[in-house]
Length: 131
Image 1 (tube, rainbow, N blue to C red):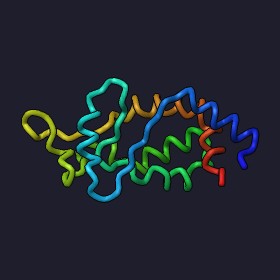
Image 2 (cartoon, helix red, strand yellow):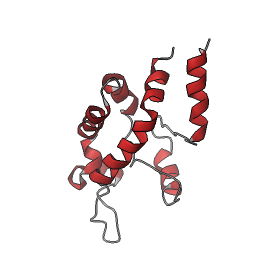
Image 3 (spheres, rainbow, N blue to C red):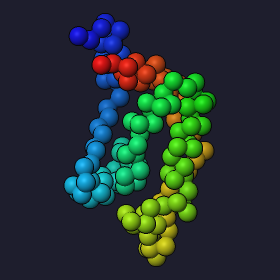
Image 4 (tube, rainbow, N blue to C red):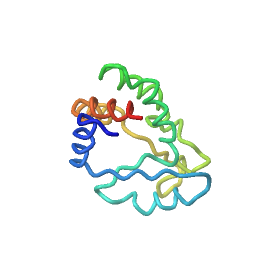
């Protein structure tokens, strides 16, 4: 049974519309991602870069906001470096010349993540503790 507190937290998530698509093996996820990638209201992590996302939260979810962001950036360092782009998915063969690598700019990401998590950190932690 969901407690009143958990119910309130779950209902507050209706403020943000999120759809997460998770893959299993070779299921066409990268193709679907390529179809959605240019939409202005869609945020996508490249290829399979987020597959350890939930595991990260189980290990680091207790940290304060600054520690959490620092840990997230270290844990997902390959998101922020063109040199670490995964070649098996072609992420280092982007652009017209096929010589550019895809990566996320670190500073804007950290700023946005801090603003976002500052508002939602309690909700996330509470949901992760639910049975």
